[in-house]
Image (cartoon, rainbow, N blue to C red; front, side, top):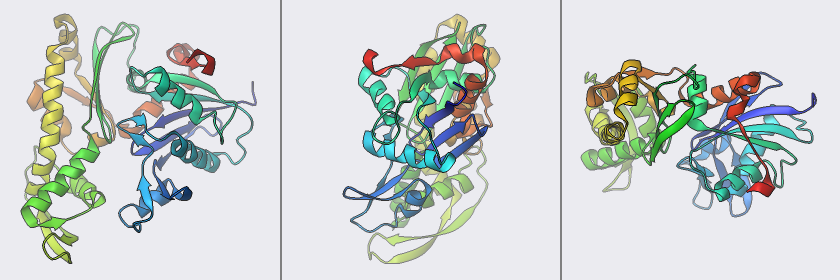
Length: 337
């Protein structure tokens, strides 16, 4: 038992987060893979560096889609590649704690099981922790005594709303809007206003540099793109107003869904949420002033976590270290699926 290695794993649409108990350290790498047919060209950060630059015969994408495993084989290769960088000798069998979405089907659970019990990784014990529970533990919430807490996780491709009370998730909803959709909206807005095509990575940099929502200060950045008419490279100065216009539709959609979600909440629980504030986390909450904007839209106060995309894996770390929290991790065996 002492020789078994223990890991906490959060498979995200944008990046993989792995906590190693043995090294007591969290590792983050892009969840991307570049392939030409059946041949793997690059994995992780190397594959991400190739995105939007690779030739037509090389496909660069993520094995995850909207927080779920979309390609089991590629996800297994991506995780195995990252695990080899953490521990050169993986050994036979480890304890793997996964942060997983809510309301998974048996087939979706089987996918997580096979990621670490397939061709590359073998004889591993799998434990699953619901992502909102991992987020709540990371934020220091007492789940047993909680009279009503709301968590919002704005990720790369989806946003999850959850309400926890009495140690149970009573209401939850996921919508397919996240940071990637914001990047696409910025690309669309710039294409419409400037007849200029830019990549999503450029849009992401503009989003973090100039996307300010409440703070409408004058700002501009020079970018290089492809002219939609001539097809030639062209420089253009992009204003912060245009970037905010692209982001606003996605953020307003999240805020509108959140307001509808709160209207479904029982009054006594909504009262406790109003007193405590809504807990906000996820990689896309790095957008400046997003908590203030959502607060002005919904009328509720927000507590922005400084863990961002590492919130779930931080919760897994606490579960691995604290035996009292281990009850939130459900063991999964192949024969029960």
